[in-house]
Image (cartoon, rainbow, N blue to C red):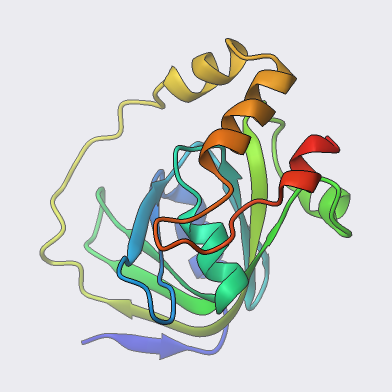
Length: 186
């Protein structure tokens, strides 16, 4: 039976820090597509009892940023693939902070430097809940994939901006994603 919690306490902070993978889900108010994305690469930080943030890397779509700009709704889900079964969800309101935004430097200071950071998503957590996870398979962690870092390293900073201008200005549902003027000012 699942339980709800008032805060991300020390036990949950430790458990979250041990997970190599989490999932992020967002949706537009009236759009056709719900988005669910896997995240990894040591990209999440618990900032407080009811606040988390994660690095949003450059990618082929911009659904999360667009959905957050439209309505702010976001859910993060963690699954125990090793050890005792457990699923842990954080439901809340998120915002995407991009380089140049107020507060960027303070947020970025919590994370390692990566060449392909497009934004940092900060989530004000409204509901914290777990569930059994009995259906989640046991899987062994073997390491991080090098392709994202290799791809980013193969681009110049201008090349990363050009890629985002081509792929990250609008969501699948036509919602605004990244702002062209912010990308060009980097």
